[in-house]
Image (cartoon, rainbow, N blue to C red; front, side):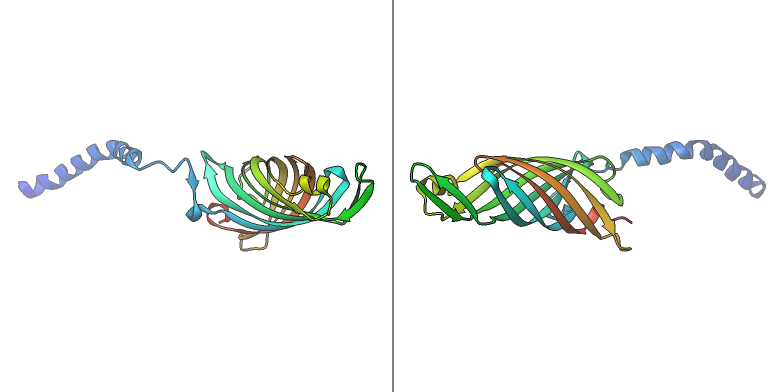
Length: 211
């Protein structure tokens, strides 16, 4: 008798279990931790970019610049990225007349700047074409040796600045780990307001790698 009923009991248990199995799975899924809303730090670095460009600066200066940018991950959304940038700028030789000294001076000045910014991506930042807007704050360390007190006082100072930029990153190659980047910047800082255009080469990591 037992052997005849056992299969029926097993079948009955299975039939009762099937309807509630999805609920059990859902409950287990709900118990899993949600994906992090932010992922920042050295372990979360998404891109390292080396860039160069050309800048037009107030008072008629023109300059070349070289720098690097690091993407330190995302904040609240993968489309909002924390980026840090360091740039060295050197102007072309420039002449300026100081009326009070009745002399004309010709020389260059240098600007070593660092900025911390947020980049807002319009699409997925790991897409083949990823446009973005960025805004941030920074500091500019200026130095010069014109030989004029009036000019060198202007270009031997440390100034805070504001950065606004629009740009795009385009993945190249089949690995998904390399990209080209183009960016137009406007910087507001005392005595060195400028507009710059930069082109860079990026190495991609972590969530920015297209898989």
